[in-house]
Length: 83
Image (cartoon, rainbow, N blue to C red):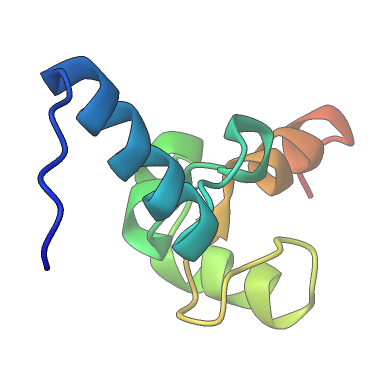
C-alpha cells in the first residue's frame, strides 16, 4: 500500500535542495575565480596577443586547462611590475 504524505511547498523545496547538495555540492565562492581569454588580457594590459601568449608559455601568467588566464595571475603580474 502506498503512503500519501502531506507537506508544505517550502518543506519540499528544502528537502530537494538537501538532496541536490549531497549529489552536487556547490563550489564555495572563494573557489570561483574569473578568467579571461588571451585577447581580453592583451586589451586590458595594452599588450600584443603574442606578448600575452609568451607570458603564458613562460608560466608568468597562470592559465586554466583551456588556456584562460586567472584574474589573480593578472593582478600578481601587475603588482610585480610588467616586463
